Image (tube, rainbow, N blue to C red; front, side):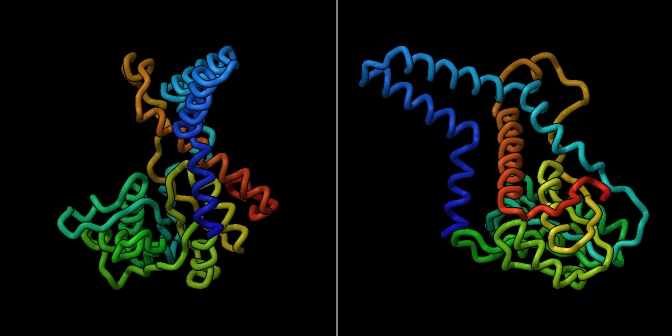
Length: 261
């Protein structure tokens, strides 16, 4: 119950549902009250904010501070495990395996497989419980994708009970202990994930995937025109920032949580 409530509140605080809700309030004031000026102001501000978070300069400026904390992992230190955190998924046996991983999940798995090819002696650990009425868990579907990319089943461990990152850290701790391992997740999620894993007494090396904030050249149109893609970047930045704040409130972040410490 608490998990579902947390997810619902978090979803309603994201830019699109929040700003649409504010616009709806403004319309109600405009049409059904004497507070017409307040309604106009609320609608105008909501529209302006929606425009701003839907353009590249604003969206990626919000996202970049999260993503630049950890560089792509190309180190040579020995690793015994490669932990790939769960994300969005479904399961349709008629689809290509990778199509069952939604949003940020496929880049996480492909980066995990890339790292496994660099460390073929390591075990891959996939995490994530079943969602909705799916026959398979998040971890199991990710494992199927890894197998389709050449990782043998003997090199894969699935942890299909954890529902969120905090639970994933605790489950991984029982398997990994003090062995060296890579933690693979989306670049914007890794700052929060690393804090959970350090709070669990682990010392992972961060291996970011799915970098989104673009600093390389773009066309002028891509930079200035609003787009659902840039809105999704703002959404990720706000979602992870809310997660970090909640992490601090609950006291689930260790005292030393800076990269490399």
